Amino acid sequence: LTLTALLRHDLYPDRPRCCSPPRGMAAAASGSLGPVGGLDLRRQAAIAKGGLTDHRLEAVVLKNPDFDLDQTIFKTLEGFIPRLVLKKDLAVKPFWHDAAVQRITAAYSRIERPHAIDTDLHDFMMNECNFSMEHADGSFMDHLTFCQDYCQVHFKLHSPRVLLIHSILGVGTNYFPMEAAKIPQLAALLTPHEMKHTEAFPSILRLILSWKLLDELAGKMESLDKLKSIKFHRVIDNQDLELDVEEFWVQMNYQMIHLLDFAPTADWESGVPVVFQCCLGVHDFLTKAGQLRATVAIQPVLMAGFMPTLKRRIGVRVLAKYSAQIGHSLDYELRWDDSSRL
Image (cartoon, rainbow, N blue to C red; front, top):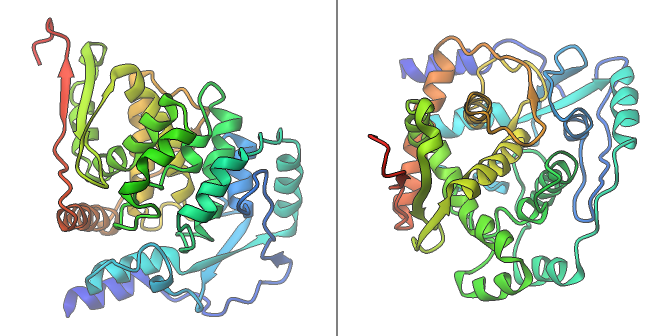
């Protein structure tokens, strides 16, 4: 009871309870470069900049009383404390200064339009899969569209279709838009490169969210040139998968782009949501390793106090529980060059 009381005080300090926009501010409409989802101003700003900005001087974030966690991909989350913490991070709505709306909209309008999705893949997504759930911020399709569009603009050497369908073989909360039996159909629509990264994506994401992989690699920074490959298990059926070192670095850049979409609109240092902590961790790791190949700029964030640590611990426990529920192993193996002493 004492912990709950402290959490309520920390998570919900005195602040406006309404969602009416303050004078001179507005909730912005969505726009999209892509064909399947809309992009709010936060997403438009990220694509226009090639990275993230804490918009604390351009937007006010208020509680959203209409938010329902059970209508999102996080509906399966169990436990009062984990649900309370996550709802605090997600049940918000930003209102933007008019000048920010104009600035971001103008910058976004200058971005090159992406290539259209081919009809066969689009039809497969719409007719053979279920992407109807809500995401952390907007619809699932909004999230997929952001990831695809950002990749096309800022990671040009690699297929943006991987990020358009990155969740098709499972998300972190055990929601599966597609059955495993349809994997051959999916593979027939993709190149071998795209398929390899698509089936690996949910697994590498869980390894990142568990922090074990990042912590191990960070501890061996001076020997990363000896890394040969990584072996791990596919989320949807626990099948063994392997990426060679070049594929791994490409995959980590796909993960980097995906994690950008979990950044809060403003006030980053107020609690630092758990997935955003992973975003910062991946950015720091790739930068230090000299493997940040996508264009991603993120301003420094100070993580201090009780809440970031609590959120990380809760996130690790919840992730382990989700994988255990579906018989998915979080074990992995880093393979090194024979000359390495690791």
